[in-house]
Image 1: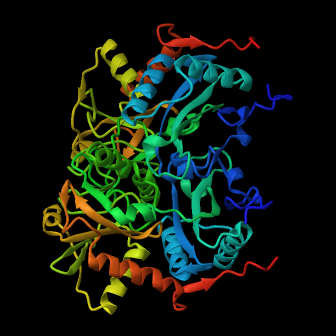
Image 2: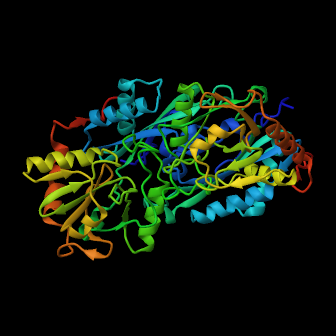
Image 3: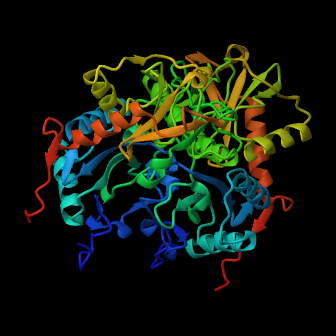
Length: 305
Length: 305
């Protein structure tokens, strides 16, 4: 597939350059999307040549832009067309597809964000795994950060997908220092929130627990909650105090970048027998099976030119 | 000065492209400086052909990188050389000079930030005013945000200059909606912090009050505190409850981008007689006078090639 295809490692689209190979995908240093992190984005997966829950990702992306008072010069149909074309040009059957709206930059030197010309960027690259499949067989060691709390909702709305990851990155360093592989942050009240790019689930007495607030309303998270109900599993979307982690017999993290990824240790404590848990594996299987379910998929036409 | 000089509107430097006109200054969409706002920066002013407090800006920039565990492939002397050369090529006598360190991107797909190749970017553009000189004659209307609090130190360290401005941008929109021109955010305890790119000072009973924590330790702020002492003015660097604003007879904001900018109204209340206050104007004059004081200046050699 890479033979002679300049887009084989990924294809991007920008207002300035149109479709370009991913290595040439650039933005201005002066775009406030960078220089003020004034940006929102969404990521949709392509699996087996099909988008997964594309319309819901577009819905959320539009809602996020509304909240930030952003208006693009491309409408929803055009965005959808650009995403399809990025994937088509790349030829990728499994892809990580990012759509990004930035504040952009001012016309004539003003600093007021409501005067800026908003920018759209998109790209498709090979599917990204927060935890690689081989590493999922072992399971992750989740560390609950002690030195950093998640940016509160009173400062930045976590339901508007954003790049304010300074706290999450600090948590990742802490997890690394403490021998962990992934980090989740507490909020100021001592409840679990989320990690860098993922939601977290605990399994306690056979039922799922995941935080209700202070987190992105992840679409993988939503999919798992829906599949859990179909499988007759109890679900609790409510505050999850940090201490509850001590009661978990299983745990997993969820993301468009990797799906359902088993956790087998939390803060040095082995969960169950140290293997990915049965409920986790059942939901992971259901999650990937759902990628062939036409209620949630949108095929890409790789042949159109 | 713009005749035939491709750098007249600004000159940038990047690892990828070396020195380029500002319009061509680009970064990869995949740089975590953008996609995780994993970045620190510093801004130094050039006034009348001289850097102002350059070594102290470089000191802070290095300290910020240390805190974020970043290492550049350019050392301090090289950074200084690049900044000089950006200004020299632009020919600008008054400039806003930005130095930026980003996490960069991974070698082979890993997501761990400690494996990334950090990137350096710099540019010089015409001097930026948060409040234009003409508007300073009227003075700004400062709004204390009610809907948004500053990201707490427990999440993101405000002394490491960063682009986590989502809260500040929300505050700017709120100020705009409420008829103000600039916004300052409170912290979770109801004390004043800072605004987008500036520190804030209140003058109460002839003495200066500015928040001690939850803010960038701005170099313009430091300069004002030093000049105030030289002028025999009392200074209080301590928590400033929001309610104290009601007692202020003068106020001003400070930034490398604009110096000392008078505030003549807070939340709809006119300060004093509605004109920029006498202490504010005295300090503003002292601030600009200091730009010719050789203890703080570093001349640029525009003739070297």
